[in-house]
Image (cartoon, rainbow, N blue to C red):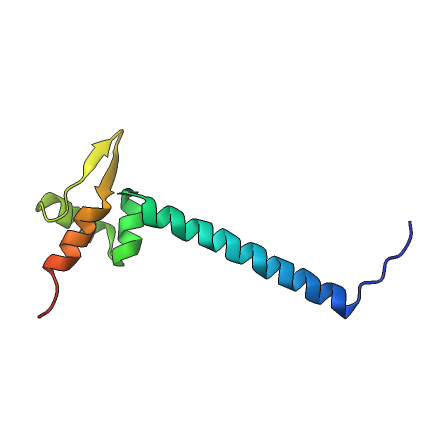
Length: 90
């Protein structure tokens, strides 16, 4: 098996290609997030940085409506935005 020597230039090229690939993946991920209309509970908790209990309280009190399918709650992005708008400090 022949030995192949890797130069600093090879590593630089690899780094540049890796960074470009990561940028493309992140751009795709952001586009998906922008066009997504419904979110699962975990995604909403992450968006709002709240606990399971807080999300449940918002749902039970009607402040954040959800749709339940097969035991999974889904939330509209527009409803999450309305909740944020309603709690703006003035």
